[in-house]
Image 1 (cartoon, rainbow over the protein chains, first blue to last red):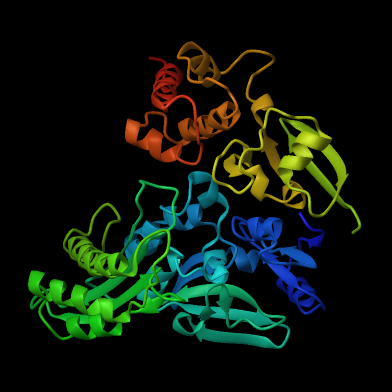
Image 2 (cartoon, rainbow over the protein chains, first blue to last red; image 1 turned 180 degrees about the horizontal axis):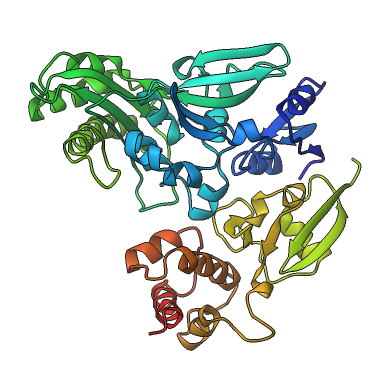
Length: 296
Length: 158
């Protein structure tokens, strides 16, 4: 592997001073992306900063203002967190299917976001939950809606000296649920051909959708929201026909490429199917709020 | 680049080393400590041959920098047996013939050991899912699954 310096600060202040240094300074959380990229020369670093020893970056807590996930917190911890399973089930889904157990034990949700792969599994679930990125630098904090965080494949809006401190997800309303599904040709250990994260909130009496969020992975240069599908759902009574209509509308947000994982046409079809399936899982989770699978 | 100090516990024994900052944990274990039971396969986190325990959790040591191991507790395949007595997991892999070339076996033993600590009675589905990060190109996995089931039963006292 090409040479670099290595530091493991234990305070955020110390880390922010390191990130302000000249040269390319890279944050290391789980390392499953960045170490491989350094080995293969796809990313370069003069200094690698292990951020896992900084308490704020390991925060995982349901507070009054929402769920806080420190940038270095690993997928295994998020997957098993009781409040995540109860209120943010789509995120629990995503954290439980990334890579292998070995990868989930290391890979951080924040790292998955900052790596900015269009196929990142946690991002659709985070977008479906209206997540915000809290970015820190020596100059202060920025609070960025996650929808505005991605600049292109592998690119974020983070500037020199800035790091992701945490991701904050607002507390979901009653009678809501989320779900994430991806399609891969194997059972596990693969990159999404397409992925869909959905969140819906319904009126329990009328079954009218009060709020809907649909986000897509692997079908555009960045993760994207499917606004047209959300508009189809909101304000209308949910049933199989509406879900099918939402699936068709979700395809409007997909601008996929054809590559080794699948053709553009196949990916558009997957968006339709996965949107329907995630919405049905959401409905099941709303109606059966037990075993941490949904909530009321 | 200046070398960095790493103090960590390997298989119960404390080690203090000076290593290159761009070394992986795998390199530190194999090339400095001569713990060559941990294998290098793909070197990118897909094959699991380099799986070790860090503070009790599995990780691919090829995707861990040496400096990250500072103050951590690492267990390699050499640390599983107790004074030369193989663990039930190791015994079962031998008895059930759950290996052919053996290159993947250290990783499977570590992952199986971690799995059975948290899930003493895994279903076949649980086993295949939890060992998905360990690739074997010889056995076709059936004998590995059987060895895991048999060692789990033995550990449960059945």
